[in-house]
Image (cartoon, rainbow, N blue to C red; front, side):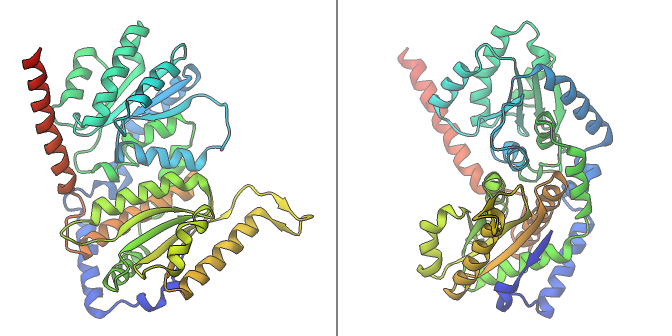
Amino acid sequence: MKINFDYVKEYHTISSLEKEKLDHIQAQLENKESMLDWLDMDTSISSLELEEIQELASRIRPLCDIFLVVGIGGSYLGSKSVIESLSPYFSKEKPEIIFVGHQLSGSYLSELLEYIQGKSVYVNVISKSGGTLEPIISFQSIYQYMKETYSNYQERVIVTTGESPSYLKEIAMKDQLKTFLIPSQIGGRYSVFTVAGLLPIAISGIDIGQLIEGARAERNCFPESSQYAITRKHLEDDGKVVEAFTIYEEKLSSIASWHQQLFAETQGKNQKGILPIVNPNTTNLHSLGQYLQEGRKITFETVLKVENTKDFSLDHKLITMNQLNHLVLNQVAGAHHHGGTPSIIITLEELSAFEIGKLLYFLEVSAAIGGYLLEVNPFDQPGVEIYKQRVKDELENYVAEAKRKN
């Protein structure tokens, strides 16, 4: 993995004062203060858990047509990003991984329950709190279906949750469901290398050992991650408050969404932080590309490039599709830079579990460093809790009123 700062040279220098601050941040990370167990793979996932996940996946895969992953935010985006980036575009291989519980669409849930009829279904519900509204609502209906459909439903439903007492914990204990615990010192958006992310990835058939090895290989990425974090900070200070996370390979769409959650939820606090948006190219060159070239100068790009992918020859083999994609990427970065929208380019050698593991770990460290640079807590999300409480209060009022009328 390589990072090119050529198009942001004017934002690249680190002052002596910033160097002191980064040294302090590095010490905080090395001391593993609160919510930092994700920094080491050994505290993200134990060797025993890893063996258990791999054994469970090898047992389920031959028996499973559809594996439902019920979760929202970090409880599903990490596994979804890895699975989609490393899976074929078109495949009939089983099991089919379907994500549910990340929205409140009645039509989605209704059509899903119709779709899974007659198929061999397994379920993994993931919620660290054990009571998050969206996944719990979907899980209740899916769990009812599982109990009505399978005499061995306890063997088909897996609960991944936190250590504290909760709605999910209670169900799992009462019905003796297989349960995995998310480490208490790891938040949802940093949980891709815990059982929350790794079990669905293993079920899909991806080598989670290689994914973890990629993350381990980046354990000393602080210099590169801090350079990315400080460059973003300089861009923000200069009024570049929107970051287009730009991809040129559609398989990386969910990684872009994962990046969006990671950075927005980590740094968007106290009237600070950059707004990250997902920008798929070349598709968006014919829409957002116009704004990035000639619109208000509030944007910059982080471009994700893949050096080697499955390729296709064009024009009597004078150029390949991959070469053309790279040609466009480089020319767009140059054009946007000339138009006042700078780019940071991150290059992966290939789409492999090892390279994706490196990328995700690098971005996690960068997001945390950026939070510390902004002097906000990188590991809470008080703004999210505000909407949750308002919904909870109004829902209780609604249910009470409905009961009164009935």
